[in-house]
Amino acid sequence: MKLLIKVGFLTSLFFLFACNNHVETKPKSIITKSKPTVSFTFDDGNTEDIANYKFEDWNKSILNTLKKADLKSVFFVTGFNKTDKKGTYLLTEWDKQNHSIANHTFSHPNFNDKNNTLEIFEDELQKTDSIIHQYKNYVKYFRFPYLKEGKSKEKIDGIRSILKENNYKNGYVTIDASDWYVNSRLINQMKYRKKVDTLAFQEFYLNHIIDRANFYESLSFELNGRHIKHTLLLHHNLSSALFLKSLIKRFKKEGWEVIDAIEAYKDPIYESLPAVAPAGESLIWSLAKESGKFEEILRYPAEDSRYEKAEMDRLGL
Ligand SMILES: [Zn+2]
Image (tube, protein in one colour):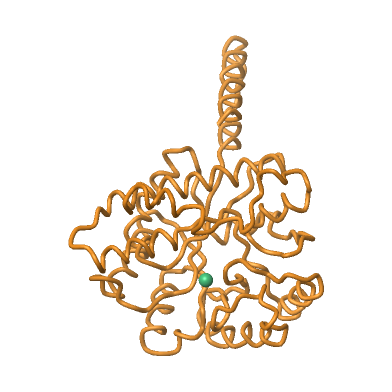
């Protein structure tokens, strides 16, 4: 925020100077550069009805919101539930609206677990690739389940080699949050309570995601000296169906520019391969860890239900 004020102040000075001297200027570029940028990506691909919402309806709600906002996302999908009728319908609908379809393993294993070997990794990658490659908006980006990329250097290097051999890029996240946890508590209340204060859930959700976005943006600015093109991780779930519209509005209100996810991935930041172990979390977390300069503010895991539970309990959510 301080920076925005500073840039705003400098821009005003610039205007003042320019007007007084009758110089033709283009101050707009200065304003544009001062804006952080965010794009939206969705993980998993759920094909179930949720509470009283039919799968087709809540899925459509996400797609309609993206369409109205004129935004394209990258949809990172698991393969296990994408070959039946509902799974095929889901991928077809997203593909038809020109969202990119990317790889999120077949069965969603945690690669920090030593039982999930390199052989399993390659099998998981290729199985889902064989399902999604038929879609016209298929892209070779891979997102790690739980953002866990391996604990040992040997495994991390092995996984990176396999990705490269298969012409895949890491579908990094720069802004991580716990939308999945808010979603799980919302659904839980819908199951067991007659009345659910959905607006209170929305308020918590919006504040939480904006808070995490601001945290990763300021950390990223410290590290890179510029506003990178961020990628926010959300899940294909009910909270996205109900709250995405307000989230996009809130980002804009807070001065963020919203862009297509595939456009964000063109930022050179996504070519980084941070040398940290365990690897994973948000890319910004990893780069900050690698720098060794932010030890007091880097928690592990970077995001988790444990950080949100007490406040949600307190609010009765
Ligand atoms: Zn996932």
